[in-house]
Length: 308
Image 1 (cartoon, rainbow, N blue to C red):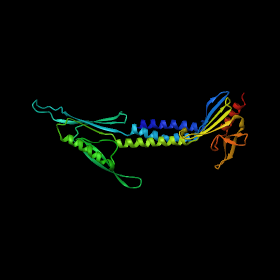
Image 2: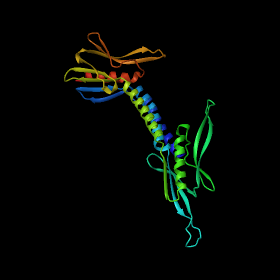
Image 3: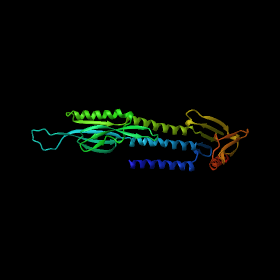
Image 4: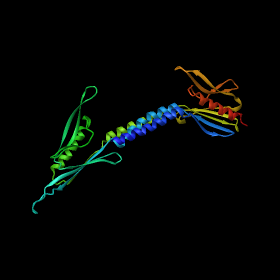
């Protein structure tokens, strides 16, 4: 278990290092086409992506828990003859030998213990105190032999699942009480916990995706052949439609980085196109940090428009 937890920690560390690199070094700009006659690029919401992926990590933790941490316990019992010296007429006494196995949800065996001479089972009640000082009870199915008492599984049963524990005890007792029964298979797979973990995993993945999708994507398409500039802004990956604006390249008289004071101190910036009509077309819905990157966008557009 420690090795698996260490593996999860390493995965999360790698993801966070990539996120930190992306936050400080990654670019908002994605260029789709850049030729002499066409320039097409998208300004992407880096901050929303960062937060969305960061929150989505919680889903990775729950996904790991589903397939690795949450156990499936199975008890296989057989009645076998004891190797005792008896006369050929006498029937050899039978003993119950069990294999207590634990799997994960992808059916990989995690542990196995042999139980020789199972003679009974009992329900052990344990008292726990939570952080608020409230008393709660947990239950554990104990498998009994003449030498030891073995817990049926690592995870105790709560008050809500105590009936499951009692049902398992009943199955084992019925098997022990019926000598003609040769085999017994008891399986505890915690299906409710599985469904709950899957639901929580999907919730965090969906939340991260919604945060990413809520960011504003801005696409700019400059086309000298049609002498047009198409400016579109959309959220939710364009599923709910786009706001599209069309201008002539001849209308553009200047491109510059506009700056403003931030309420948190410092300066924030945005790229804007100045039209002959006096209208200002900002390429982003709001001001943000990153002057150098915005200056690169201005230089790229000016170089494209100036090229013959």
